[in-house]
Image (cartoon, rainbow, N blue to C red; front, side, top):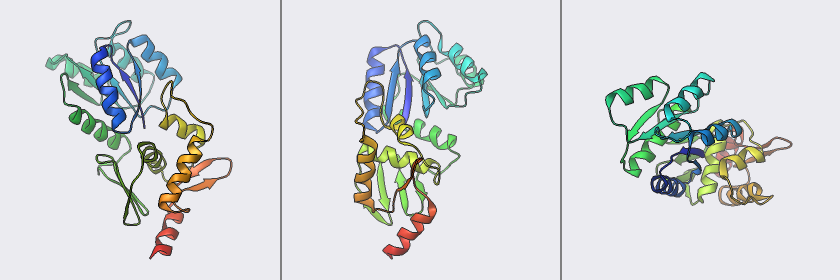
Length: 230
């Protein structure tokens, strides 16, 4: 899952990006409002924005107001040292989905991100369950047909992307956007390698190839897999 971090403090940005990458997220990081606008205009695949307010070139609140005025519904979590009630009210009224005051614990940041992603996906429950799959974003654990399966961070992200809207194929390019950030080298067959590894761990029917469209997890295949394993 791909996030945009907008933070001008190098120490904070470095720490937050490292922690989120360790949690399996792909994180693009910009350090001023103008660069943030360019990133949001060029990259439609962000699942969430982490927004500092005191930014060079364009203030965070102005950036948020512009984003909402254009009808962009992407979740925005403000992370800022501005702790006055008036600042919180202003940020939330302009369209922020949550507001976290610095300094904060990285565990709390992770929990708030997961809560916002669930809310945006229309889910209240923390665990994703579909067919024979069970994914827990807080622990990064995966089970399939009742069996726990060890997966890499990118394999978890690929499964999460396919299970966001089961039955809808995602192309290789769409999956690459979810799995890789700026400057990361992407082999021409990287998605195929991840899919191959997941099929080896989960079974050939777990992920179906749709010719010309990409990859999909659908309920019919999940049910067939469950029936054949019983």
